[in-house]
Length: 227
Image (cartoon, rainbow, N blue to C red):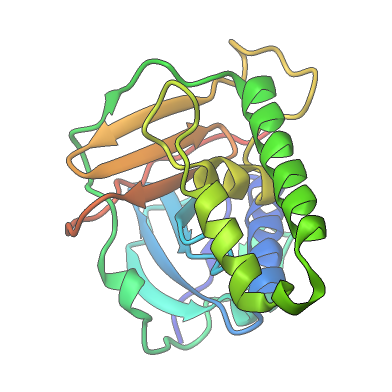
């Protein structure tokens, strides 16, 4: 059994638990890869509905070193928010995505990304389009395959002014990564980064990464304070 993880603050534990709960909502059998080092923890997950890689970071009290893949649900059950502690469950066989993570360094900022309000508006318009097109389908064509086709068409489009697919912005909103309405933009910045074939939507609440072509590497573990 791996030694417990001790979060720097209770809100770090709460934020990690909220992220895990959202992953389990989309996939009850979800697995997450954990990487810890230098006083920080990164939790990687891949919600199947969005086909993106999501990561939530948290500051730890010590310099625990860890790299393992575990059940998201079991890790969630092992988080004690009141004491800021997490019991790491036994490792599981990692899904294919867990061995292909974004690079550790080399990220550069890419201009053109709308602010959080603009992203929320773009996602809302895409959801409305999907619903309208779904309602227009004749009964004989209202199948899962046809709905999936419409969804792929819509969510593969780029966010205006960028090469980031809309599904990444949708995932960021659904996972609670986008700053809430009314947040001051310069206090909770939303940034688009690129490194090789990877694009990464980063906010103070977490990141969503997508890969255009095959690539290997790891994402650096950086402590982030979450409001």
